[in-house]
Length: 279
Ligand code: C2E
Ligand code: MG
Ligand code: MG
Ligand code: MG
Image 1: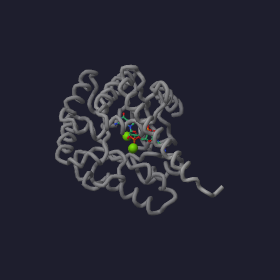
Image 2 (image 1 turned 30 degrees about the vertical axis):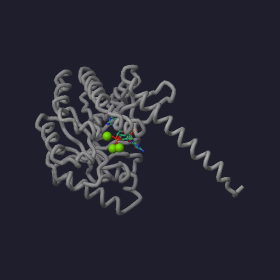
Image 3 (image 1 turned 180 degrees about the horizontal axis):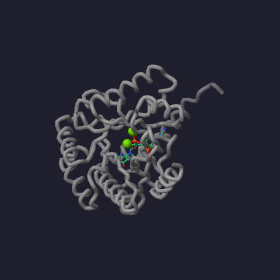
Image 4 (image 1 turned 90 degrees about the vertical axis):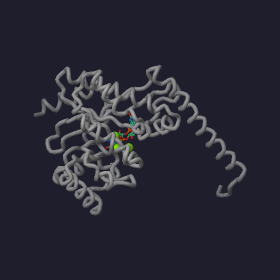
């Protein structure tokens, strides 16, 4: 049983590889039709004010239902969309759809802020600010309700990134640094005074109760937010203990399965109504 058949292993390796290549090819070609065929949709995860439990806003998260492959996770198809250049078109679809949905909530008196993820590739677009402004005006959204999430990667081109962040900020659209702490330029990002929000990556939140070092680190990040004047969002909160730790340490916002998974727009309305009934 332990004896290995080199030849068969080789065949297994090649066919697993071939299957991966075939899947990637299907995803790349499938993405070209995904928009026109209405296969993309958004789900929304609540962003909660940790001290009160109120829903402050939601993050739009992209989903794709491929006719044969079924639901393909964004961590799989977004890198492919970035490589193949499709990410810009997809990204602007997300912006339109999320802003349209937010206006719909506003017209039923649900005062929600909307966060959308913008790929580093899309962030290189010199017209990004103009395009955001056009969509905000098209749907007549108050720009203060829109939050653009970017990762530390965009800081590779620091001058360009700072200019766009500044333009968005001056217009009233806020910028959040997503997955904070996992990139290579963490502290230089915080030095940019036009960043309004920092989201502590879930790999830290995962250990705030079990590891003293991580707890200290997260406390320090919360303090830093207070002194440098940006709000802190803790992502990936899965337990009551984690939420209590963050509440005791005065973290402003939280997201995670403990509060809610990403859900449909209808379910967001239900969640808010339930919350109101409880109070
Ligand atoms: P992200 O922006 O950091 O989003 C958070 C991810 O963590 C989401 O995964 C969310 O469903 C998941 N999550 C939320 N709470 C918890 C929790 O308590 N525990 C755990 N384990 N996970 C939690 P999702 O929806 O699969 O998205 C993955 C990533 O794909 C996003 O990470 C973002 O980088 C990217 N993405 C999603 N939608 C878009 C989009 O419209 N445009 C772009 N460019 N990227 C997107
Ligand atoms: Mg995000
Ligand atoms: Mg994140
Ligand atoms: Mg992420």
